Image (cartoon, rainbow over all chains, first blue to last red; front, side):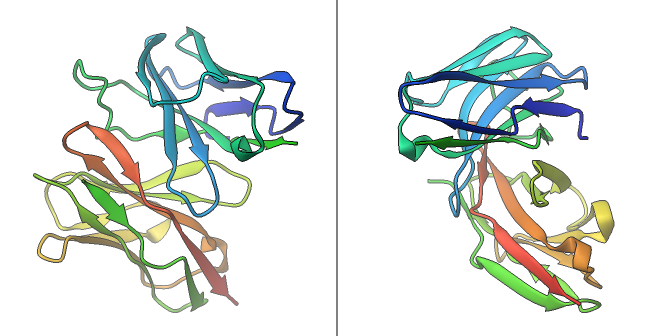
Length: 120
Length: 113
């Protein structure tokens, strides 16, 4: 294990369901991220949290709702998703964010194994 | 716009042969460059990064990458491929305007015994 744990590993849901993805990091990192990975596309950054405060919301539809109750845990709440939302959702963490702009481009990211989401 | 490109969807190489996975970038200023690897059913794992210093960067699992400023490239290399190196490899570059990471689309490396 990489120190970042994601559950569930697989999730199938209907378009009207509500579900949540969970991420937990055991590394003492202060920044956490949600990425979406679709086949043959670059990783899409969705959300960034630093010390439980959201610093990035990358034009993500409101049917995705993140929550960061503390620096070790990150959730992604899912509501009325579309079939095109089917993808691998990756959680990542890093030691810190650099600067006040929420920049993280020089940080090494530690990723979880991902949650494979299928929306029917 | 700043970007990173991985021109090959897939690279096939025989075990024991050298391997190269290509990456080119377009950023303003000095680039921060990364390679990550994703094994089946796993998240991405950091391999190596270039920020400054020696153009040849050594990383995990015997991989290395060469920063070439004139060709704006950061190709990933290994002298002798292993079957266990078969995975999806991602190049990433820091966008100097936003200080965010831009990932490439990934290159699938297949090493045949």
